[in-house]
Picture (tube, rainbow, N blue to C red):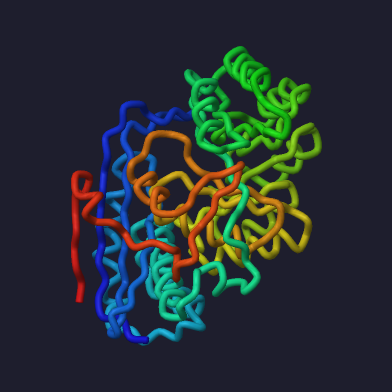
Length: 377
């Protein structure tokens, strides 16, 4: 197929309450999308990761508009070898990555390109993306409500429970009393079969993480996510694993198949992000490896609706016992999309049977938040 044009959209929505993490806050929600259309009028959507710091989204959208058109528009792409095209794109943009010292943003725009091309290929084939990746993929995947802020986590879980969730992830890493108080409050109100996970957002040193894990160990915690910095040396992660009484989760902040595969030595739950690195093919490679060696694949996502739907399709195609991360915080750039599919019921996320990721972008419903749009032919 030949690519006719590429479009870049940006959106930003004010919210009534910021997302709170152990390192900072996210006071507004943003989304950068790319749309790729071929000469037959078929199209696909991808989302460029961006949530922190708040200007990241607009910066990466500008980078996409500057770097991608010369390599994408007019390209002849084999729909059965999107991975090959994206590897070639990575090679072409490598000098930009090195010269600008921005490997993360460059990987992000390549990941969004991957998403858009896979969505296009699935629509072209008349199949849901998950079915294109795995003919036996289900339409429904287990899910959990993510991003519970420390100040109102009990109220948020009550709301999410009413919405159909049965698993939740609490932000920790603030202070011992706050963390334990919130864990106890949440567990006191949980029904049979509900699950609780913790995310420290890279807060601690190894010794601090071990101490925190032992402090939390009396409680039924499903995993402890990123207790130390993701890029700490392997010896530190091994030391943490050796003395950590809780299962460990991570990989959203790692790049590269080899890097993430190596981290599976200490990670029980593997969480690559389809918008940060690797796109669809990279995350599927990691997911298959994780499932093959007995780890659990749980895709990370905490931005807009297009990346969430890609993550849901990946989760379904990969199989295993993982859960789909769905942000519990206010974000119309996500909820506008989830309203277009069956959504949460009985603790699981159900997709529709439409081709690709299952939805088009309802631009008319996003007008009030749209901040930019560029077309490249």
